[in-house]
Length: 296
Picture 1 (cartoon, rainbow, N blue to C red):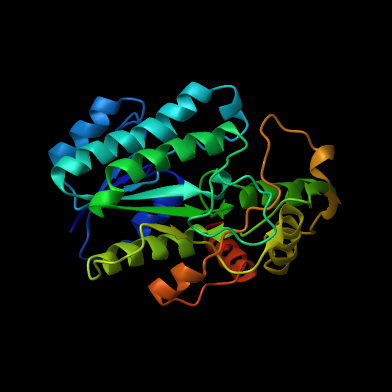
Picture 2 (picture 1 turned 180 degrees about the vertical axis):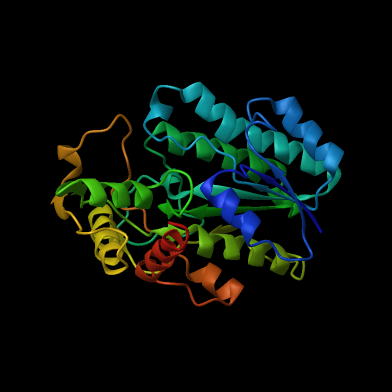
């Protein structure tokens, strides 16, 4: 099975590549290979390679910078998926689009289900919602797409909250972290396994879901996540002494982009469809830190 992976040098792309099934012929594309702002190139690559699947991990992910570079964010997160969808409609391949909890406004009090109304409150969320809409219109009616939303992605690679906090625990005595934004952390190890499971299982089912949510189990604030990173890192001797993590409110840490206060995704349908027992986010953090220790 031929699979085309965009964003292969990012944290999720690297993990998907590392965990690929043996029978998959995985073609890796990173930014230098494919500029996602070049829509004709996006189309021609798909038409030339004719993959059975495109996994689109390529994205503009700088949430705050997207407020300034809104046009670029829309091009990469909105128009590139549309280009892939148009090409796949012709070639007959499938698209696994990695999307985000940021398509929701964060005003819910219960976990978001896949068909809940999208209402993004920042440009990053808006740009990802534009990409979703194009896929819904072009590929969903043909049963050639799955939109997989995830949240708070962490890994040993690239740039992410876990690596930032690990560095701060090493170098600071006190860290102030927002405690009133609630979500579900997601390890790229768990997410990558889910991606491959989705691709393999969709081949066997005509009634596979067209939208899915996936994260690790459990719910946390950014404060909770930062605290546990310090606890486990100290336990593993990755740091000499954890910093004191102090909770603050969002209003005390203003950022250019507004973030959803509550972006917990309901993963129950995905867990059932993939027949998996999701790893708790605390265990996922430990697995990542153990992996970092192995190569440090």
